[in-house]
Length: 427
Ligand code: GLC
View 1 (cartoon, rainbow, N blue to C red):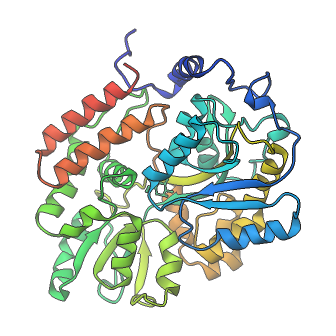
View 2 (view 1 turned 60 degrees about the horizontal axis):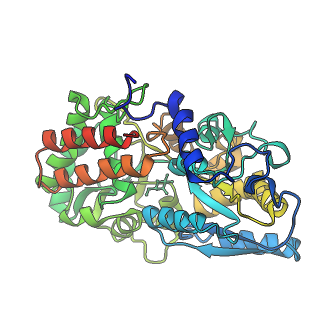
């Protein structure tokens, strides 16, 4: 097969999905009908568990309390995971492999849909399980769809934004070069200039993809073939490598996930921070935040204008092993209702999936970051869509990390990345 060494292009994913499903178990089926686990528990009601990563913004518990008060015989228990995206993934995989019936509703990162659906772990949201997506941002619906079937309900979207100290930089930089030139301001103040998520985990894949996309490069092309050795991709990674080598990205930033960067920014130790919208609310309201009134929000800087964010976000999926899928389905609808979406936005500055909320005058008045966020999400670039995503992201993280730390030249790191992404494509 001509493309056999390439990463599965979107159109070919069905072939790999079928192959994987066929290997995994004869009882799993990706259609809503049949006799496998997708057909059981559809009408059953009772207590369920909701599994999600750390509730940094403290918006999950109050919602669940509200649900539980209204559903005394169908209560939801919150199982909170850590705040590390890789650990969240591995916890879900272990429990799904073990067919744990207690992981009823799971918060699934947008990049895991293909993998989990191909393994036959997610209840297709078809027939009685369908959710109405007409009011949702199309990009978010796409992240919950695999081979034309919905496997999860979009709950929160995510787009990268630039947090900056408006007391020190009245006009935020529009380009990467401009931002780097402003690092002298940070130096004079004895604070770090720029940080994102540069620890070796999913966040580094996000940041690497953004650096590459912002220079006009791509991780894979439309046919799924890796494209990380192009001049544009090279320039993108080189930007991070140079900034780390010259100190514009502080040394400790290679240990930063989202939370470490947020804490440093709130402590006044950074001029610029790339992070997700959830930081806005915490930086404004945390008692310990020293930047409450002195930070602003701008689009990520790019080559000649705004850069390109990676598309993030989380969808709620029902495990095929859940015993109470009717309750799980109602809970999914509760999570995506306009009331809940408004609550996520106003209390946690999370990005809604309902497009109308971005133009809701009362919301926009309260949340001035909404227009910047909408632009970020509208222009966001999805990470590669493939059931083999764990190997693809590892190829990106490992090689980007080695290059940023200065252990491997950029060209070598990208050539290794290219080969590893290719190998992940099903050989
Ligand atoms: C955020 C994003 C998610 C991404 C993760 C990386 O949670 O919503 O899509 O994978 O950060 O750390």
